[in-house]
Image 1: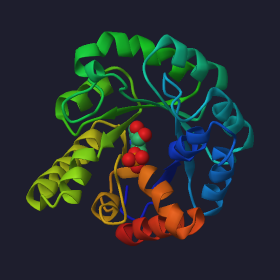
Image 2: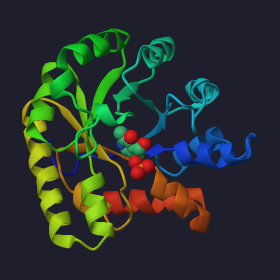
Image 3: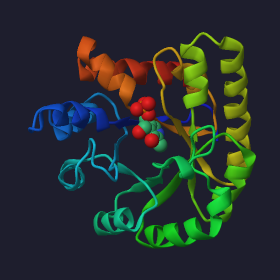
Image 4: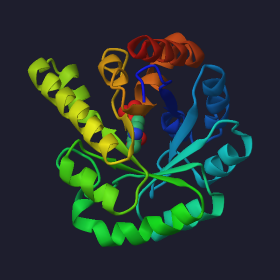
Amino acid sequence: MGSTEKLRLGVNIDHVATVRNARGGAYPDPLRAARIAEQAGADGITAHLREDRRHISDADIEGLMEVLSVPLNFEMAATDEMQKIALRHKPHAVCIVPEKREERTTEGGLEVAREENKLAHFIAPLRDAGSRVSIFIAADPRQIEAANRIGAEVIELHTGAYCDAFAEGRFEEADAELAKLRDMSTFAHSLGLEVHAGHGLTYDTVSPVAAFKEVRELNIGHFLIGESIFLGLEPAIAEMRRLMDEARA
Ligand code: PXP
């Protein structure tokens, strides 16, 4: 795999739904945002159906499955309710994310190592239904090995610690987190896992991660929706796309 291989951008539209839900109506519509994201160069749309439905709704997921011409990456907790919904829609990808404190590692990823058996059983039907299963984890070899053992095809590395350190001016720590992300991308790739990354990425933090040749996809949401207030959604996404392509070149 060469560094020239195109890096995919998944645009997370959850926070369009956050703004909509602040008024309880239908505006702004996340499906409209998804269509604009496609036009702006998104290779996929990511949406997290949370157990408390704080942003994306069941109807949004149904609508996205109907209208999207790019793949849907359905983020969900490992619960029976979410598994049923995923099995009904059979999205292109399912990303298992932690929602409760006890499901998380200190770095914020899913605690896979402690829950291996349970998660292996949980993801098997999703894989059988044809969804690519991704696990959102910290850049930690124990979690990567566990994700591999349970049969995940993809891991998504949590970039939150890197982005937080950068945003708060702790640059040495940001560099150390970045080195971990780089090493763990290489390690996961050597096990045969496809590597994605995301959480908290901005124009200032995206380039070094985009340059890791083992990373095949970035999922970015909050910053892009925030930036769209100032630039508009299409230009905000197009600029992210440009920075990713430039870092990859
Ligand atoms: N990837 C995963 C697995 C996530 O859970 C999220 C947040 O929902 C993101 C990426 C996007 O993070 P952000 O909204 O901070 O860009």
